[in-house]
Structures are given as C-alpha cells and as structure tokens.
Image 1 (cartoon, rainbow, N blue to C red):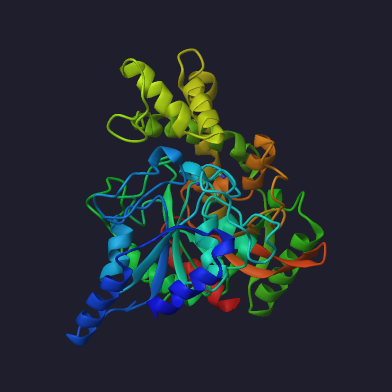
Image 2: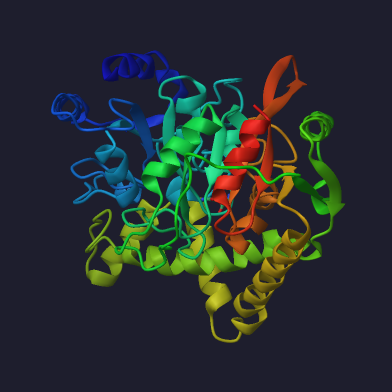
Length: 445
Ligand code: GLN
C-alpha cells in the first residue's frame, strides 16, 4: 500500500533518494480505489511509484536537482507519468538526480548526493541515482528515470536492479525537462524484466504532444526471443574492465550458451569515439535548452540593477559547476569558427556509430557489453575530475547516439573492500526491437 511505501521511504531517509513526496498521493490512492470499485481494469492499480525530479507532475515541485528550479511548481503532468496514473499507479515522490541530468553519480544534485543502498560510502550512479536507489532499497517496485547517455542503465547496474532505455521516440518526452533533446529518453527501473514489460506497456506509444514520438505497434506483454539467439559481444567493451566485471561477463555468456544462444565477438570500431562525440553533441543541445532559465520566465529570480545583471546573477547563483561547464562547452562547440571542427564533426561520427550498429545487427539479434567497466565508485573518487566522470559512460553513450534500445540486467557481484557490489550487463537491440530485450532478459532470470 501507499502508506507502507511512505513508511519505507521514511526508514530509508538517510539514502537521500527522494527530493520531495507527493502530497496528493493519499487522495490519488482513493481515486484509484473508487475506479477499481467501479469495475475499471487498472494494470498498475495502487502500485506505488517514484519519478525522477525532471518529470512534471501537476501541482508538485520539479527541481531537476537544481537551485535554479527549487521553487518551480509543475503546471501540467508529463505524458509518461499521466499514463502511469491512468493505469492506477500512485506517484509517492520525486527522485534525486544529478543537476539537469548531467553527471554519472548523483553527486551534482543541489540537494546533496544519494547513497548507494549496497554501500553507503559509494555513489548509486547517475543521473537517475535516486530512481535506482528507491527500487534497490525496496521502497517502491517501479520508478522512472531518464537516460541521455546512460542515466538509467548505469545507476541500474550500480544498484543491482533492471533499467531500460527504450528506442529513441518510444516513450513520449512531453513534460520531461530537456537535457539533450536528440538523446533524452524516459525509461523504467524495476526488480524484474516482467515488471519492466508491464511499465513499458503502459508508458510507451505514440504521443501527438512530442514531435519525435514514434507511431509503432507495441507487444511488451508477449515478447518472444529469436531462436536460435545470436549474441554479439562488442569487442571494444572487453578492455579496461575490473576483474569482477570480467567474471560476470563470462558467467553471463555461459548462461546464454546454456539456453542455446550462439556467441561471437563483433567489432564496432567507431564506438571508440563515442564519448567524445556524445559530449560534443549533448553539450550544444544542453546549452540551447538551458537558455530559457534566465530568472524571468523560468528559474530563480535574482536581484540586479537591470535585466542583464539580474539574468546573469540568476544563472550564476542558480546553476552548479557542472551545468555551467556544459553550457560553456556547448556554446563553444557551436560558435562560429568552431562549429565545423567540433559539432559538425561529432554529428558525422554519430552517423558512423549508427552504421556500426546497423552492420552488427545484420549478423546478430542482440549485442552485449558490461553496463559499466567498474561497479559503484566512492564519493569524491571522480567528482573532482570531469574527464574521469565522463569516462564512466564509455559503455552506454554509443547506444544513445545510435538511438537504439538497451537494457541493464543485474547479473552478479564484485567484492571490493569486503562489500558485495552489483555488476550490470547491457543488452542492445535494433531500433524498435525493445520487446526482444525483455524476452532475452527473461531467459537469463
Ligand atoms: N553521464 C552522462 C552525462 O552526464 C549521461 C547523463 C544522462 O544520461 N542524463 O551527460
């Protein structure tokens, strides 16, 4: 029940996984009860859920983990969230996140970091660290995050839960605060592939309010795995993994073989440039998207002697260091004289990466990599070094650039300093073959 979920949230308060609770949760639970009593069929009746704090829920705060939006109240509800609610789910709260979904550890939140339930000295991953932690800690069975370059998959891996990044366009972005619009996708966290399928069946599908929303049939409730299943292990992801990640990768491949899959290595040579291309594409988009936070229409209002002074004070005080760094990087990459060398070059690399994936999918039904080369790292271990933090995305960003779907599955543990830390394995499918990933995940459960 909702009450029990709220009590669990209270018990786990030290994790700092939630930025706010939904004051309307009780009333909404009563509405759902009334709809059930009236004979409505509700696939998620009364299921408590948490949404990342970059998704609008009418009448509640949407902070994006930023001082800039600390006082912002949503005037409407995001499509994905509205669909959860019409299926009977009750949003109990909004999850902590890296500021404006920029980071890989939830350490850039203006509301303090979220702790990893497996080892509170370590990060839960990011940027959807709060959404991952609430499912890992058993507060709710389902949550929503958003994934621009790995922000659902990597925290799922760090906290030992399932996390899914759908094909770009499969889930509406209406009501999701934009980070990098050509990459952003909402995706669910859950403790089983079956639960992910249930959520996807509710939230996916065409939405006229999002111009990039796809209109394609959905079949999440009866997905089938291809037989025989041809699995391609991406060669470029075999380097630089910790021994524990390498061991979990081997045991996952053995498990796939035992259910009849054929496994070979495949090279996607352009993925070597994925991290560089990702940051040269996402930061220009972010710098454009974040231009609206000027303290006038949106955002923190700061005093100043004139409009310009007030706007720059609002941005100086409202944004944290990482957000400012990205705005500067993005503006630079777009500026006259540098556009061809950086942004336009990165766009061409994006095409090459998409072609690498298309070629690999001529031979394989799914591709496989670790979700991250290492398990959860310690607080402060990477936060002082932006490039070390960006390197945490090495296994996830190429997929985002290609727009294809990917799923992180909890497949084992690595013991570090006496603590068992979860390890995630990532499965990747061609565009619109989202259902296939869930079917393969079921084979591995
Ligand atoms: N870590 C990546 C970034 O900081 C991905 C973030 C995300 O997926 N929102 O941009």
